Length: 197
Image (cartoon, rainbow, N blue to C red; front, side):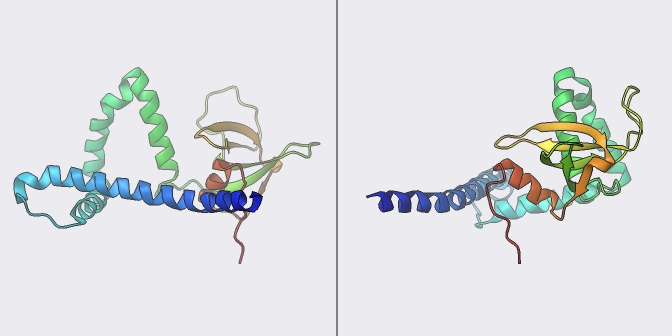
């Protein structure tokens, strides 16, 4: 009976990530289809083409991205953002999400800021994987320790969150891993094995 139970668990663990991913993609497609049809139904009537919602959603994202690349639209967006950046509680949430999105955007250029590193404290055998999020202390308020220090974000497993530490650069060792892979591994507490060629 024990092997049967083990086979069941092994099969469940194999199917669960696949099933959840497919379900989330399906839910996203269904939601985008429903939203698109609600928006365009007044213009097209009962005409329906499967995938139209997904196509419209993708096209809208590309179009908005193109618009945001122009100087005039970027200025208009800053006016639209004004309420979100001035209301106390909303400001904290919006600014945090915007900064996080900007950090991972293709336009983000801050030297080697998007770098995965191992943090080793002097005299300790402890190793922590983190991401360099700031390569300098310029622009920060007074009070930080002087020297060649960087900000390292330490993501926490099983939840969105983490800690940011300001440490000397020589405490860090870069590793050959993408930011996406490091975040994914941190999310599941490094339980998965890395696929190496």
